[in-house]
Length: 543
Image (tube, rainbow, N blue to C red; front, side, top):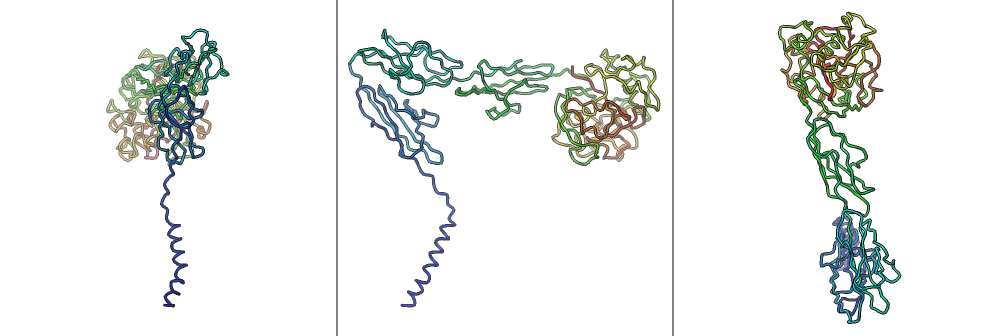
């Protein structure tokens, strides 16, 4: 028996330690505490004349919200700050709220007020009546009893003879609870008139309005109320205060829906309004419209050479680009002869074209189609005044060619325009080649070309609907070549260095390996040089 007692005494500390460990390891979340229900002072009941009711909560720092219309009180109801004035039969519902606590049960009190037969000043009325409005108000306070003095408050406090005297309409510039009481010597004061005036912002307005347009639009969003903040979205989401704030007109170059909402301190926000713009550019046969936009230019996949970096932002105006490389049929129709090495099919891309000859082609085609030529050499836009393009030598006059960037005629793409179109106007998805990561789907190159050019349009187009931007023939661009130009390239409509020895060519050819057909790949060539793997593609401005 003694041994058993010793064993129990010995084990008792160990049991206590074990119970402590179990208690410490119990991670069960303790339930939140519930707030006490508000208490009325004085208690609900029958009263003669008016009564001021206070609301109390045993839990410190709890907020009490109440209603006097029979509605369930929420955190959007009246917040209790001052005693509630009751001068008629009313039902007060109240509830306590506090962060981290369970809201209290609802307390409800019925106060029945019987007025004495003593003469009383008539109760004031508000004009316009209480309600929700979309503009600043001037409220008149009227009573049928003559020669009275009306006192009012906008703070929620009960009006007394010490409160402001009504002499002119009361300006309501924010959400306001207006209380008014009329006084006259030797007569009992009136009942208190209570009016809640809510100011809700009207809908923002769009200029121009929603609709179908044949060119990009610059949309302004306006509001009649002063000091309003307008927030908007362009991606279909519902705008909130965290959305983009409107400060400047919004460029809408492609189909777009703008949603907007207006905010102002102490006003209810407007409803959300939206406007959909359809931009229906004129179609040009054989050309694809590239809308204005922003993209990331350069070796974004980190698979290229040093002169393809750094990757940088470029913003471009809209333009049209040839759906296909210029074909031999198109070249002959304008120039009358065919410089191509592979010329047994009119639908083959023209090859053997120098940069100088490409300028001639662009201006001649513009003149044939009654468009304004882009290029000027020796103070003339007529290629017949230029003489024959230089052969196997750089020419000072031809290298000083001027470009009218506002003209509607044909021209060579800038290097940035070429890459933007090759990327289909977006970096998502970020394809290695134009429209695909699988080169054989979109390009004629050294492994599949049969050592020659191939008919345009046989491979898959990119996402913009443009064919052969990888492969078949290299395409001349406007820009002079500079290996570190990307370090200093302007963001808006870059057009390359002012001078140089080589012009940019892009896209790869039937004779080159896959690495040259990457969207970011850059190569250069003398402007007087042409061979069987060099051709062109033309662009035009959106007017």
